[in-house]
Amino acid sequence: MRYKQATLKDRSRHVWEGWTVGDFIDELEPTFKMIRRGFENHNQIKEWVNDNQPYYKKNIPEVTQHFVWLYELYV
Image 1 (cartoon, rainbow, N blue to C red):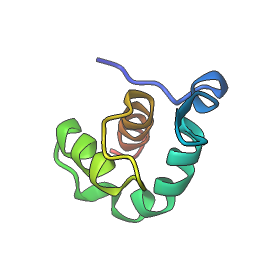
Image 2: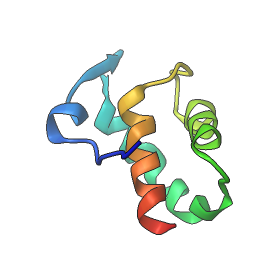
Image 3: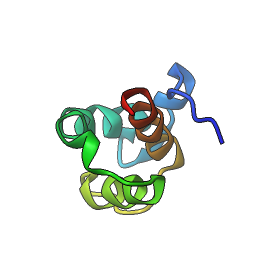
Image 4: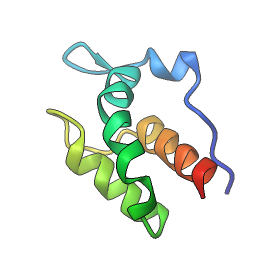
């Protein structure tokens, strides 16, 4: 399956208590870029995103998809 970067429409979607998809991406991206080679598969990325996104611990598909897309760029 081919993943894509989160679009502007995706990024502006409200998720929880004023937080948008873009807010979660912006919060996690610096850390992800430092450790991006530490993942072996997409499920590990999904687990990392869920564990590290602030406040909201449920899966946000657009956020996970964005980081899988970034991971594929660097592999």
